[in-house]
Image (cartoon, rainbow, N blue to C red; front, side, top):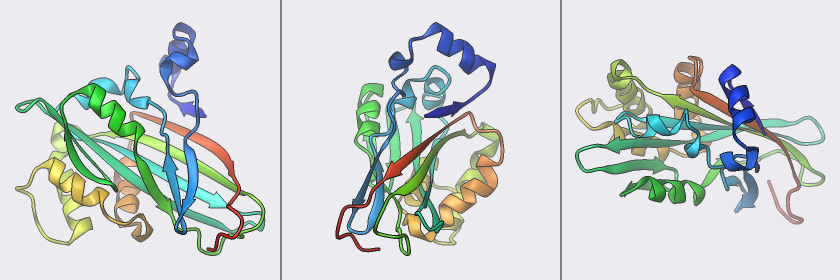
Length: 218
């Protein structure tokens, strides 16, 4: 894994043992019903520069980008999103991903929910079934400020159904966006074009080798 921050991350590595950060292992890749699935995301929620944003009352979006290439050079891109927002009145974490939306009563519950996520990220149509694929998985942590709340709601709303739902909560719009099939690429492309191009809080990436199971078809 190659985290990308600045000097602060270097200093953090010097002060804290690497395994204690919970990010020393790569995510897991599986091929399920013709779809590449990412699971076992490292515990980046525990990072000291990430956790405070999760309790801010604003949406923190985790954008997972995936690219896969076979031995012939054929390359495909995909991804998924996870949205997290703390609701201070009810003291719960509102979460949304491709697996659905939920309300969690504690940070410990949030961390457990994160570890259980299985995200369909890519339909590998056209990639060679024989041999191995080189897969890059990147996770970008994108916090939204108060001034960006209205634009964030509008981006999510227009991506899902084109309707104007500006009076609905951030969590509802994030939930609808996270359920959008990754194959369409609409929500992911929108986030890439607007949010990730800005300075994300922190990013990680892993370069993995994945061998499709024998008999799989793409």
